[in-house]
Length: 594
Image 1: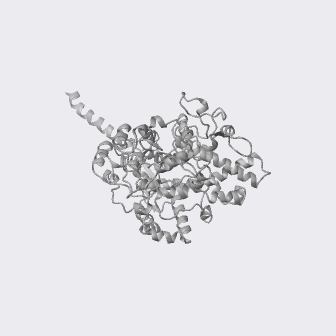
Image 2 (image 1 turned 60 degrees about the horizontal axis):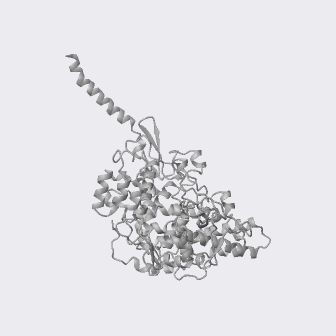
Image 3 (image 1 turned 60 degrees about the vertical axis):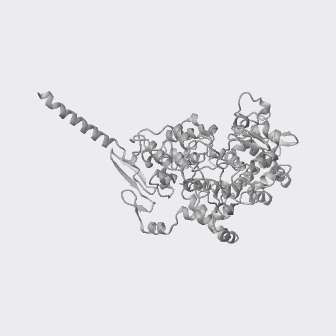
């Protein structure tokens, strides 16, 4: 009788213990309670405080704006408004671009964007709080937001399901291409291969070291993809005469040396003989002829600039010629990236300008650290087509990858003409990743989970964007939104990379608002944070005098190509020849194509 009466009581006590244990065990920072860049600090088991220092907000969760914060928020237009103004009214921007207002607006763009990136760096994947190790250890990528705490109820904090959906399901449902969709901004394969070639100098994940590590210790534009990431690799690639890099002459033209001539590690299939393996600064550049093409252009440009400096400075030794040429090529790269690459990508009628002196009168730190989030968002595999069309020949992935013969058989001019004419794919708001590249996108999702990236909406808020309230607001339509909701359960559990790829694109744009507003600050801070842009470096003497300085200040994609091939191909640009920027925003085609 006593035992029968005590059993329900025992069950009740156990249930109460479970409830209490569950309540106590939840880390309050798993709720991401601190708003507007406030920092969550846990005290004991169930208490937290938000550090609102220098946020412009106060209150328990840094949610109450101070007076000046309210005024600024009231006066600040939305990112969508800015984008509309900058991509319309060409007649107005033609006037602005020829006045002092261009410099004023360019300075504003640079400072507003760059100020969104913390400097010095804050977190990394091993430390979810500020530490000397996170600051000093450049073997790690930095992070804008700390990892989701390990003891949270769900992978995304407290929202969503206890298990995230299979990354292959995400990729196949929402990213896999059914039909190639060209970029409405007219991007071509010259653009696609430039993006891949350029970013492989600082996106160099080093998985063997553990989570969040990188081999790109320069954390920016240092051209290690041309010169090698170590001194040993650099020396193997150098000629040690007149500052030049090693090369070979084939068909009367300069190409990278083979690994027999420059014994560096390159990733090639075993069945490719060593005499057909190009030796380049980046070990993976043998993968695609487009990467080999850009490696060849920059090799030729380096040796061309060495000749110019040698004539100007006959007393300089090999080392000074090499080092000064490297600085010139860094400057050329940044100039091309801002005024050709970013200009095209933005679609702005404001003419962007590379002029480090614009920032000399403002507070700015000339140091950069590549972030995990920047690496994640830059996986633009949708750019790649289904076939690669060179003259009248269509190459499949199987026949294109690791095919160094294409570069030699067709020559540089033919590849440049072909890549200029062929459309690249649209990135955001569409299912547009070729099946051959889908496994890479899956790997990005898997990596983000290992690194415990915070939910997409937390990044929206961190970069001053309004959080989305629903999947439909993200996608702009109902069917895909319903499928996402079934998989994730709650929009506040939506993952970072899939959301960037699925987000509805800007009107006739290559991708959505978040990719622009999150990606641009990383990009501009990294470019202008380069040491050569500092007052100490940005002067003619750094580049060997006026002649070298002029090479930097007049650099362009067209000059890079035309000064380094026998016959300059027509219409050298990052967009297809028939593309008209002015007419793009008057198209009626819907921007939501998921």
